[in-house]
Image 1 (tube, one colour):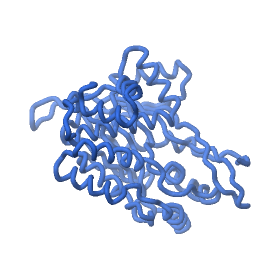
Image 2 (cartoon, helix red, strand yellow):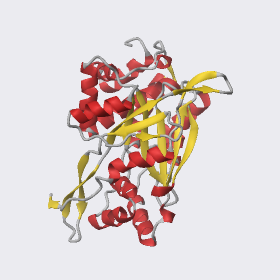
Image 3 (tube, one colour):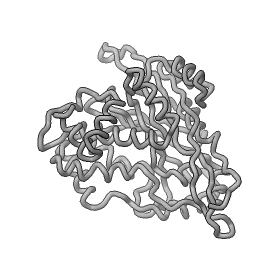
Length: 349
C-alpha cells in the first residue's frame, strides 16, 4: 500500500499513521491499488474520496464506529457498500446547484453512472443509485435522493426556500475546472488530485445556515426528511457495510445492547436485505421565537448493514452481484432518522 497512489494521497492529506489506520479498517479494491506515478486515475480518486467520507461518517456515528472497531479487533475489514445523501430539487439553493446536480457534477467525472432510479413516493423523494463504471461491484455506490418540495404546502415550500437560499457552493472555479479535466481525461496530475479531494469532501456537509426553531418545526410537521436536511444538509445520511448475513449481524449487535432496527428490510426479489442502527442524536443551535440561541436535540446520521446475493444474468450467462436497491427498503431505512426526529425541550445554550 505504501507504494500506491491511493496510500500516497491519503498519507499526504491525513498523515502516514492516520492513513494507515484508515486503510486497516476497509477492504481496499485491487483495482485501486496502482503503483505510484505523477498521474492518478479517476477510480483512485473515487476510492480516496470514499474512504475519507466513510471516516467522516464514523466520527459522526459513535455506534457505527464502535461496531467498526469491534470488527477490526476481530480481524475483519469493512466492505463499504454505499453512502447515502439527500438533496432538494426545484427550490432556491443559493449558489449551490439544486437537487442531485450538486453531486452529479462530482460523481460523473469520478466515473459514476446512474445504476437505477427509485421512486420514494411515501416520502415525496426520488432516489438514484450511482455505480462506478470501472469496478461496480467493489467501489462503493452512492444513493443520491432528491426531495420534491412542490408536493407539500405553500408554507412548507416558503420555509424550505428561506432556509436553503443561504447555501454556498463549496466548489470554486479552479476545482470546477479540475472536475472538467478529470471528466475529459479520466485522470489528473497527482498535485491536482490532492488539491481537489479536500474540496470534494467539503461538499458532503451542510452548506446553508441552520433553521430557526420555528422553521425546523414547520419542516418537521410535513417531512422528517426535509427537517433532517435542514440541520445536516448534504452530509452522508448513512454509510453501509456489506456483510454476508445481515440477520446474524443484527442479532449480534442487538445482543450487545446497540439500538439496531427491529425489522430486516427485504427487497421484492429477495436478494437485497438491509437493517441499520438508529440515528445518532446530535445538538444543533437554533434561534427561538425570542431570538435566543438554544440547543436542539435532533437526529444525525446512522450506520447501515446490507447483504447482497448473486444471481444468474440471463444476457451474459454469468453470476453477478445484485447491486440494485429497493424503494420499499429505502423508505424503511429512512425511518431510522424519522423515528428519532423530534426536538427536545430546548435549553439555553
